[in-house]
Image 1 (cartoon, helix red, strand yellow):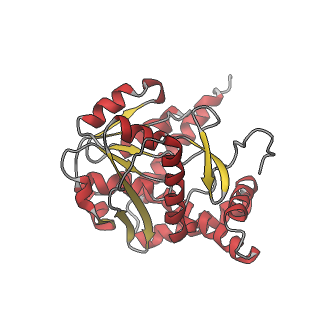
Image 2: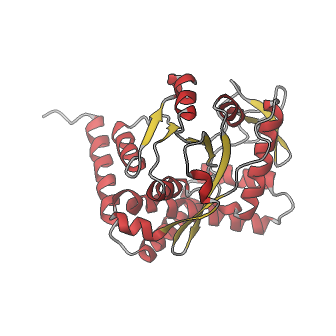
Length: 299
């Protein structure tokens, strides 16, 4: 009797994982957060390679903090990461009224109304999926973003269904190029942009981030300029009751005529945002992986 192919077991495990998330959606939030705490501690203990990445990131960005303080931040980061991941259960599967009760938009919400071209700067805080949902629920305006396909097609479909659950979100692939994105932006469809990761040396510039020359894509300046759009930051924060999604006022005098200065300003402001909740940023990413010529790897 022949054995089932390996992809059979992979698909079974994926479907089981998605079914588990659907089941978790009905749990009280306090229970789910407790599970997230336990999962976070488990990841901290077992996933040593990623724990090392987080430890290095904190050591590089917060050298003024003691080793004990940075260790505590690392532990908190894994807990927030796990809690935010499990929160996708109710964000993507619980009744709409539950999501509305748990995700609150605050601040300059008026910046997201109307039809003017708008780029939403959404940094990689762990609650970014709550930010999608919060804006879509309150302001169901046709919007766009750039999406990278997942290698696991079942996971890919699940993520896409979740992120497109509320409102009207169009997804562009990186292979689609700039023109359709700019056209949608000029038509008044806000663009969610997440440019604060290391995408390699191509199309990146080195600008300071926590005092370190960091490979950063200048896409925020580029799309704002091409789309003649304002830039509105969106900051999601985990709370005991769910999420607070803070809408900040649009940046003044942005973009300028210098993409390099604009990108440095973006990193400087992102640093200010992170400093208000350092354990909720996505530090498991190798943010400093790409180094200037001649510099050694930090990892």
